[in-house]
Image (cartoon, rainbow over all chains, first blue to last red; front, side, top):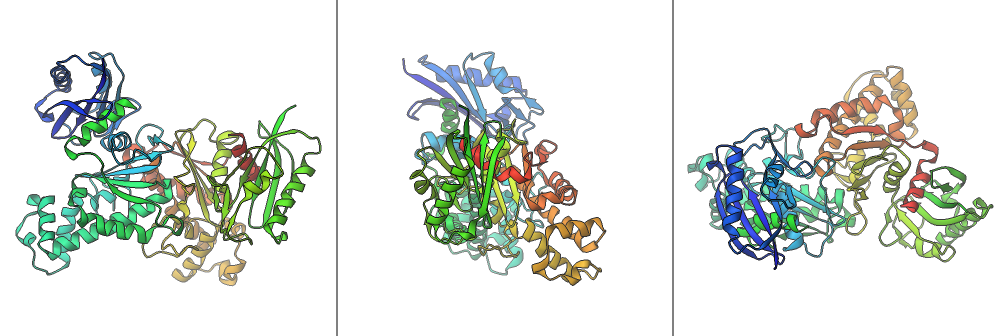
Length: 312
Length: 312
């Protein structure tokens, strides 16, 4: 019987579960609203039942991989996650092990994304690379010598909180100038506000409140030559490109892969990012480090990443 | 017969060579002026003869480790080093292999320092740590998952060139705000100039030209309550501490070990560095990451580091 793994992506809004084979084929999948589970134990029950539903053919599940916010990979816990309703130290692996007596692995979303790119995506041939997820915040998964850089208690790769400017914007954690306050879907929205303050250009965004701003609308506005949208992408790409150039001096990756909502705006974010990245690289790194888009299909990327963790 | 290795530290001024046993004991050592060798081949010859002289007892040399500036560990070459007189790509391993048919390993000084701390010094129990060398410049050796982070072609860990400020001081490579232009022995001297410009305090350094400034004199002045010296250490420690706190979000080391000339000024650099380090750490890193001094005796540290490379 062919072996499969279960990939679970726990998001603030949706939890997605998939049955994945060795080649990265998603055999079946299911999802439910994370918040519909009042207690954490209800959530565990929901996962258990979902896996049963998915595996009607009773394939041999060899392991489970889980991607979650604030995941402590070494202890197998989710710790005081800002986007989930349950508080404290959530012992997800221990609880799932009550039902599934197989290896269960946990890591944060960005680390899963890195494993996914390594096994199924654009990093198959790399042993040194970084994945940057540009979603609500900025996450990072760093691979060096072919292994995930986890840090001594599992919290390495928090580049979204890297401070790039002592007087800069505050992040949710209160970090001044934290990178994700600029380079993320939310950061781009903040930059729209900044540009509306700084310049006098007409813009469709002069009639849109902050809370109604959406990434796709900013891309569409840029396509329509909206000067505020174009300036905002330029500004975001400049900050992201410079920061990524700096990060190269840490682990000298062969490639940096950009994924997530903001990366989906394509050339608008990629062009200024790549330009300022190359411009700011140290002389002996120039023309050696690729900036790539994800090699995973977006709809399945998160679940594939979690599955990759299970296979590894 | 007991096995030994040869550790070679190639500095801009002095080349040191030692015969080291497994426990890190330096059995015998020798040194010569690097610049006295006009051609690179003379230098190689000098190394060969020195090793013969060192090994009069004809111990079994199992391998050679070399620490050098601008070392390409993967190709075994030293590439256009700024502080050495020979130019181009120097094939040091290939040339030494003509005389010594044993494994020869090469890495930059800071990577050797990291290996030395891991084998003989203060990092024996760590699999995730960073060594920062605060000498003429700032070097770094990063260990993650128990392995040196080398990068995809051997040039990872160039944190001295990490840009911390877009409008900042220029480094030798022309990087704006490169960390080593602040946090190094040279950076401290530059900061003395900056403080003499900024403040009107009396200071012994108002009578000393830049080229006559020496680290030990700055420490002595601080001990004597010289306000410019004290302010300069404060300023340097603040920048170094903040930067190190930022670096933790990359690889989450268990400790950061400071070595080299500037680290020898003890509390003057350590106190402000540790204060600003803890202050700027992300909440989930606080009180978890140690700042340590080197565990190696300074006079043998570089040769021990090169020897550690040979043993690994």
